[in-house]
Length: 245
Length: 346
Image: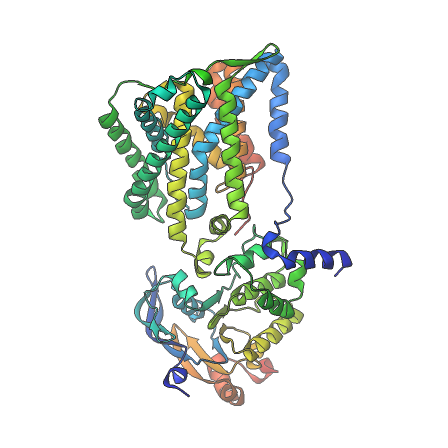
């Protein structure tokens, strides 16, 4: 493996982010390897969403560095970060309610044109999109919006997907669909940084895990190791055997 | 999935870019405007007077729409409250007067073609001048106040005063003349109804600008970005598009359109002072608010509604003309608090 391939795809080193007078990220350090799914876990208010927004440049890091594919993107503007190969699915999905599904996806293409084979590949994940193709985004259900949001993120080949709590508020059947889609994306060598609170969802799809608390990383390592260590789960995530069942 | 929907999807997906969004058009506001116009007919009494007032209102409404269209996009796209927008109207009208002398042979020619060409050249130059002023205005006054409404209101009102004073320095305090060429003057007779030629031209230009803007917003990639940016600016950036650059382009184009509106308004009045912009500012703001912030269709419908109410009330009860605008705004906002054609919720 070359040196380039051994280097992590994304690295956060000593990242601090302030929002107004609040000091949210307090020296975040972690790496996302070039392959697989990395789960970013932690309780509410731990700083997970702020971490994703800081990576995307939507909030500026006040200190530290964010390195993506060997380039420093700490001060890079959000559109340029997106064009460098990072796609972002925010917690509220960011669907344009007045635009049709087609227009939502077309906006995410770099030249305004669809790559037909890729579109068909996406319809393979989410066949329902064909039915909603000309329907305004604002009329879709939560699960349908999540499909559009993820389809929009992968309509162009991206090096990294940042996905913020995709299962929030979704019915169990839709969550299972999403899990299947992530597994298939992973199989197609798409690297994902996934923020989640639902440990049962990520344990089946994530390869690596980063746990945050109070704006800092308190654990990072292989997901398999965390799954094996129930005491660590209890300590980091507050999961007890009943909750894990 | 039904067979019908499957075949329709397949046809659409074969050429996704060719497909236009299948939206339902909300006709209720347009029907309300038509009903409002028809309801005024028995009050006015004479049908020829009603037609004259209505055509005049349509012409004024189109000019108001042209002046307000850029402002509504700027409001919607960047949440910027530019109360200095009226200065672009004045600059457009004044810039037009400066072209009159060099192009006078065409303006005074007996050829209709040369007359029309002269007006087109005057309007284009005025638009370019106003667009250039808009670009400087954005850098000097809008950019430093980004994200702070109170600052925007104060700075843009101050900027309008500065620009008005600059107009006085450059062109003087005398009343300016912008005479229409001979072939565009006068009226056309339809039975016992006389309709001014220039009003028909204003209606035509307004309709063209509206159609052009709607086509641009619905069919072009820039239009797609603008519509998306009006809803969720941050997400458009996260998809790789520079909304800041788009905003500057929209601001400059909006200033140019205000300049076109100012030129048309100047030709309509034929003589004016620097207050030509400030005089229409309140109406422009009412049009933007009741149309629905960021909505071109709403801006168009609201401009016609405001012009109709002003003209009818000016005829029936002149003292209440301006009050009628406020009354229309209150009624519309009670009916549709987000305007006639609100944009989709974020």
